[in-house]
Image 1: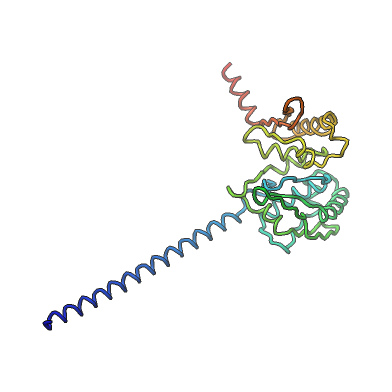
Image 2: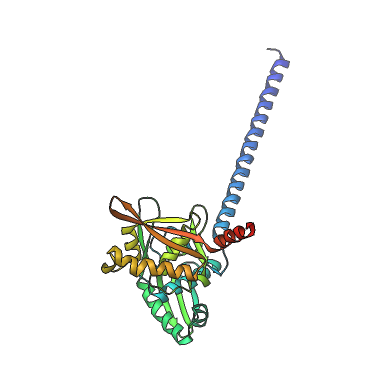
Length: 288
C-alpha cells in the first residue's frame, strides 16, 4: 500500500476517534442536564406540596380521612379545627409540638376562660386515646391515632402529631384531595353531629349532593344503637344537624332517603351555597 494511503487511513481513524469522543461527551452532558432539570422539577413539586394552601382562617383536611370527628366531644372537635391551620402554616414535623393557648381557644369559641381551660384539658386527654381511619389506596383501610402525646398547662396545650396525621393536615394537591372551610363558621356549631354532617356537605358542595350509604353513615357518626332505627336517626341526628348547619353556616342543607325497593339504603344530602342562592334570587328580582 502506498505511504500516502497509510497516512490517510491513520488520519481517518484519528478523526473517527475524535468524533466518537465528542459524541460521548455530548451524550454525557445531555444526560447531566436532563438529570439536573428532573431534580429541579422534583424539588419544585415537593416545595409546592409543603406550601400552605390556605391561611389560618381555614381548617383543611384530606379526604382520605373517612371518619373525621367520629365520636369526639365538642371540645375535641373544636380543638382539632383550631390546630389544623397551626399545623399547616408552621410546617411542624413529627416529634415537634404545636401550641394552642387557652385564651385563643376561649376567643375563637366565644366561651369564658374558665370554660376554655376545662375544655382543653379534657379534649387533649381524650384525643391521645382517639383514633381515626383513612384510605391510603383503593381497597385498603388504615387505623391510626390522632395524637402522639399532649402536655396541658393553665396557659394551653402542647400537642405532638404522628407523621400520618401531619400528612393529612399539611399535604394538599390533586393527588391528595381535601375539604376546607372557615373555622369561624364551623366553630359556631354545637350539635352532637353537626360538625360531621357539615364536613360531609362541604366535601361534596361542588357537586351539590352527597349520597352516603345508611350503614356507613351510622358507623362514621358512631351513633348509639337506639339511633339505628331510621325514625330516631332522622329525629335525633339528621333533622337537628341539617337545621343547625343551614341556620349557622354558609350552606343550606336538606336530605332525602334513597331506596332500593322498599328499603332505605342511603341518605342523600342536598347542598346549596347561600351566596350562590342569594345571587340567583337577586338576578330574578333584577329581571322583574
